Length: 182
Image 1 (cartoon, rainbow, N blue to C red):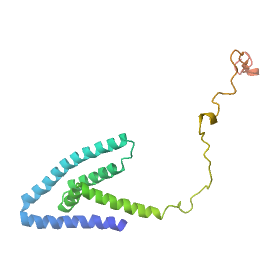
Image 2 (cartoon, rainbow, N blue to C red):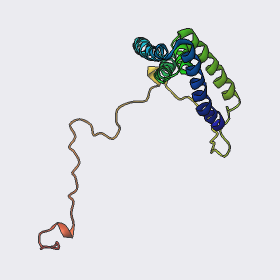
Image 3 (cartoon, rainbow, N blue to C red):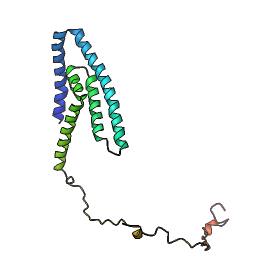
């Protein structure tokens, strides 16, 4: 994984520079710069619109009592798309615009979900060296009103009974003149 990240940090700028040179030679300097700025502005506007829609769908999902897993994934894709679109370059703009297309996000989400599920199947057991406590349980939840325990407290005095006397606190130190100052 670290080698893949290193490769991405080296390869992406090299590809972007090559694309700038090629498109700059074909379109010219000013149209190429205008295209880069236009993709950043258009991408920002699209992300704002789609981001508001994703937030609304997440809110509706939570109102129904469902976890907004899909909406969170779409929101994360929009966050990455925004970062890619604001990064100057045609490769990053293409990847960012691709993440703005909902069917592409859905395809990526399904692929990630399948990969995570396949990976989790092999790791259903606890990690090596973890403390595991094996036990059994029995459900003792009462099934009917008749089986429920009495909720009245048994330690209460019956009505009309005199309360028990509360013993006084104290001892030799509580009398005046017996303390350290007295």
